Image (cartoon, rainbow, N blue to C red):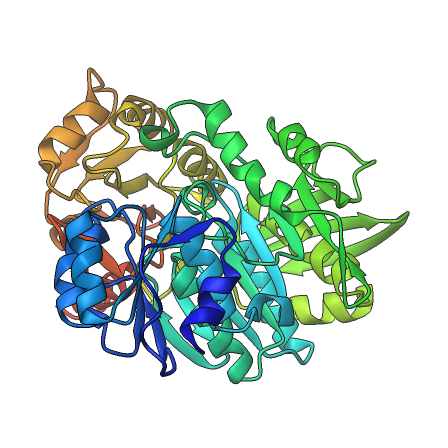
Length: 502
């Protein structure tokens, strides 16, 4: 693609210099270390680094096109001398989304894009949709918390929702791999920061909203409005003769915010209101399976879901409505695909290595999710319910900690506090803010997570239930600025096996 083609895709811009480079632009980058003599560079103001700081160096390297928000007269002079075209825009974040979509030839317009947002349930819902689509013959891509998936290839996820440049590149790779669909988790940060700009979402799903990320959003209303941006972005158009669709958890306090944000067709799901588009009742759990009745358009369907958790029944209804109303699959086909769904790694994952107690790994890290998981496990607990937990908000939302402590001391029988992405904050400080004045039940502080896991397993007795909460399927621990490889389920399995053979 040529420079002028990229520039022409912008709307509000000012060329500070002429276009000198006559060759093709072979890459669009926002990392100065990746820029070369056939690149377009976008100067993004990031959390840790401002791309504008690299402009002088890149001009000297004769980078052919630089998109920025400001430039000095000296930089303009040097750019002309070195043959660099400088283009000034109001927002490089917005320009990045436009240029990325143009460079990769509007890939999201050629995929069915399903976007799931909410505090809890994004990963489970998106995995359900992706898995069942593949059972039904699709080749899918996924972008989410656990990993990025392009057809049969998996890549580590750095952010739940990557920046717009990475997003469009992934969509392009999905198309090249033969994918028809992309199922993405849309975080509130991503929506506010414009990471989904220029992504043509076709079906948007809202799972729920509970306290999280208030260090960023400040209030729950702001948080809800951030989530609603996905539904505003949805619009009310058609693609390939299919109407855009909004699917909303009717039982959530903030459901109305999502309703009001979109003009698209609306479907709802509920475990309270039988008049919702999809409604579930007669919910029972047994041997790691949720059995329930699904009501849709006056018909009742028995469903068996290979996951524990009443909240996963809600996640399932969102996935069901997506396949039924957006894709148009028959209920028979969807229920057949449901039977094959194996569950999601790190989401109510039951680990059975022959130990005489129950072991569960779950991502629950918000107060609402933690309470629901513990309440779900309580009826299955004949002995003690032991919980390992460490607030994952090191250097972040410290105001959430007292509430997390209240839940743990109210619903658990014994607590093992440890590290969970502490970043630069001392683990004992994080834990002290959760413990506060509580002393109702026994608790332990063991900073190294692997040691805390071993301690809880050593303490376990027959018929106890052990919940390892907070990490789920995450593939890292954030210690300082370092992302250290870590997999909770693997560590737990390895430790259980070792202790059983000692």
